[in-house]
Image (cartoon, rainbow over all chains, first blue to last red):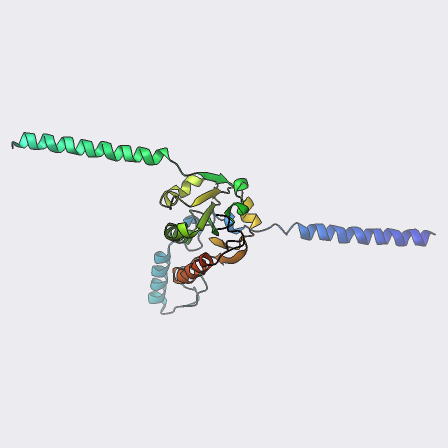
Length: 82
Length: 170
């Protein structure tokens, strides 16, 4: 009898753990900013590289002083394919 | 004619033109564009027309190209049954006022600050345009705007304008 009660308790605990995990995972479903909510992110101050020209100049100075280039990506962000 | 007299005539003319220009501005201000709320937008009301629903915001750079382009289409093909609904998704519509004021008057503007319509349309990016045929069937979705691809989009819309839909009530 005691064995059966213990088994039920374990099953109940397992169900609670699964439920808690499902709820925790569900909490991540609404993360992220929707495309129409990006007004603040679109502001110039929010850009990773706010001034493309300054970055290009910095990279040129770095290249001139170190005689080395690359590793910094390209000015303006993006995929750096060019 | 004495210089004083010439000056006086010129001054009167300038004043008259200024007053006329001010009156014209007042007339334009007296007829502001109707802005619908997100809940007031009814897709069924456009049955019989080719409808483009365009989501835009002033912070979105490509929107500043796509909306005037759509405005040009509305001006050129409005009589053939092209309707454009421009849905602004900003909290403050005044930020897009400059762009708005330059649009064709036939364009219907919807203000959706809470993103209700945007969520219903499940936007993937800005701008997003949804093209419906005359029967109200969704025919195309466009995310983003590239001027190089604009002609193809225009052709798509013109082709829909040539088709006759089931709901040709207008």
